[in-house]
Length: 211
Image (cartoon, rainbow, N blue to C red):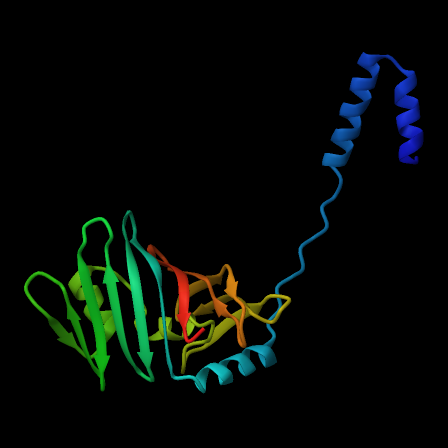
């Protein structure tokens, strides 16, 4: 029935009957089937091209905010990440407690500063952080995930959105979701959420260097 015919019929009936009819129409509309969302796809060609472009830019960085959780424990910090090839320099500053930490890697040696008892050293950034703070953060893989790339040497299952950008990524037991992008060639993530069991890392990027 055309909408004009429905409205003409409603005008000829009483107010109570008209209200009942409108409610019935609303219920019918609410029960109408919702079109299914498009199933996620894995565009390997687009992802491989993206990763090749990113690999040609080994020096990069970003600043933003990060929320780290481990079970019921959690914390928030401002983050400044600088990457030069395999080396990195990550600064974390908690805005409430004004505590600061610095995790850096140079030629395979990792240092963690800002803890009580002095600087810690090791060769595995993830193991060093876990031992010193109790936080489980996959630092080496996060350097790739933060830019929307797969970590090297590990199997990965991913999906891409209609624009060919990463939507989800599962790798090394971690599940990563991408929720927002900065425009560019290639686009860079704005929000990255990673989780493995009770461990979680929620990254919100405010600016990339270079953009």
